[in-house]
Length: 243
Image (tube, rainbow, N blue to C red; front, top):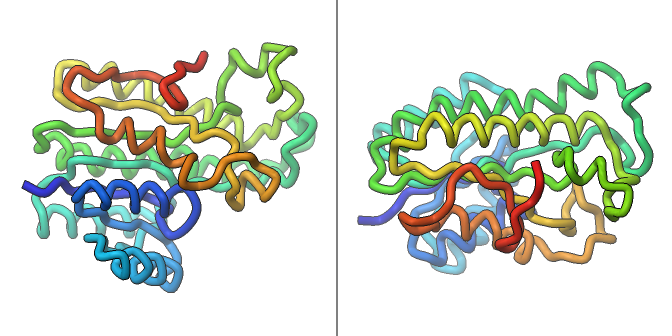
């Protein structure tokens, strides 16, 4: 039976590549994107490669969108096997320096609306469908910038990069990963956080060393974990990171 996956923020960057790589494994992928034009463009590009994908309008900060997509999946498929929470925003302006003393509250709230609150709301809505899967997988696309361990390590290359809104939202997402994995530990659902690395995207900039294709690999691997795979981890390319 064909597996069903939902990838958020799938119209570009890591989300698009994640959807592509999952579809290449003969998984039916729903491309979540808030912009209909961009979403349909991504759908057409992947269908041109003979991949089984369908665009669904999904702004994860919009409860009505979440309800509509939940209903759609329930009516069309009755189950969701894979959820990749990839949609995210970076509104701090600059990566360098520490803006914790000056970050506007609107920036903080708008960042958390997508990177945290929307992700939690969507996941909670999808859980009844994921619980119907033989092997449910939830992958939260996080960031090394959300790691306390890294930000306390003066020798780490990321130590100087402290954009507060983005980093705090990813730290919160990591906490959600740990708690959700714990809540579901008696089930066949695995919940993990993936660090894609520094990737050439609208968030990572053109200076990043990794391509979106490379950045998607960790999340895809976690989405395809075997039954004996880990849960409640934070990793990149098999390397486990400190929370």
